[in-house]
Image 1 (cartoon, one colour):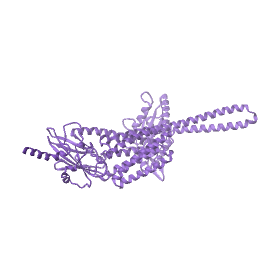
Image 2: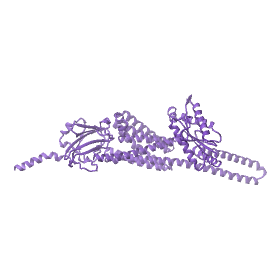
Image 3: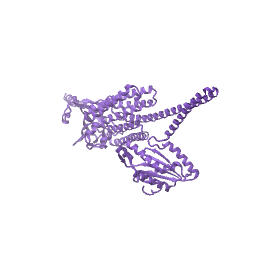
Length: 622
């Protein structure tokens, strides 16, 4: 009887322990473990509970998490989670509890160390973290056979996703190296997209490339903030700014995406409602930006999510309408939007707790955004190709009309031989009118052909025309075995001119520099705008000494003659690289240009406003 009573008493003592979540063993494994199913949660609606109060809670107050990611959506409430860990190994083990939610405002951990409380999150200074990492990494050491209870307090105005995983320290460092490699490739690809499209804008002055470049830049900043790199590297102590930067960067990226979509799809020529819908979206975006700067964080965050969804839906609608109207680039544009919408939907649903918050959902928007940007770049190239095709079709129509007019002239001349003398005057008048029309068409055709060979801003040869002229000059020099010199010229600090005086002043500076250079060159020389603020000149029958002497005069002339612009005088200078020689098997046209370009690079690197020749050292300063 006494033995039975003892057994019942032992069972009653064990009942509270049996009602708790299972103990999570930590074997020495190379795989990461998910602690969510082993966690209990207690919701602190008021957010005022202390650790002593939480430890005194009855087991009935705790509820099992029952999710692999411990996700509770939005709301700003405080959540307490407890987790019991056990080390079954016969040696001490070092583990890392990694919380893969860099935007978590506050996370407190009790039980990691006996005398310290872990406090981190994006509303604590970055130096508070025990491990310098963009995510929240909690170090944990368990002795052999030790069992320990951890209690975590999580509170955030954003998505309350713990998304925790446990791994050995060795596994943590291994995964971190791979993650940094992938993140470096991702942001490197975004940087390449930005530079590529911005360069095309500087060459073509097509504003669609400017808006797309700004969209890529703002989207990159948005991802840099979302992944935790911004708090680690850019503003580790600017907590208020970091809080508002996430919805702000999302809204700014959305704004540039709207402007880019409007220009790329040419919605000005689309249905009327597309114009006012775009204006409404821009107004809503500006409102979200204002909320991010001055309003409640949660309202700005939800507003940015709603704005992204609305823009995505309307962009798909506009894309399909333009596709139906026969606008060919809309096909690729539709593909890019579909990928981005799908990825963004995964990200938003994981934040609300509908989908599990994991590394896959965290990086889905990265992968989708990268694919979307590549597709958009291809779509921009397709758009340029379509414009070229339309230009060629217009040229073909002009040629057909000219041919038809010539046939009409021939038929008129045949008719002139058959009619009587009384109609001869009228026939001559008609013939004269036709000849005049042909002359006008021929003149227009010549002007069109010449305009295609000239740079629209400076009036100099463009790059294609330069290549043709340079090939002819090089072939002639090779036949006559006469020297040929190439001057690669670049305006110094041209970006500062644009930044200080504006792009109109930059255009005026390019025109001024082109005029000064053209005055100094002979009629037999070739001068062209090679790209941006870069010019190239080919000097026939000129050796290295003569080219160097001319280059020094060009530099001095530009310094002595500033560019007049709106009652201002803009100081300009020039760096020049020279390559000269007699064409032959050892000196090709491509090599001559490359040598001049290398000399220009040395001149720029040596301080600018210099002349450098393709030799071991430059001759002297300009």
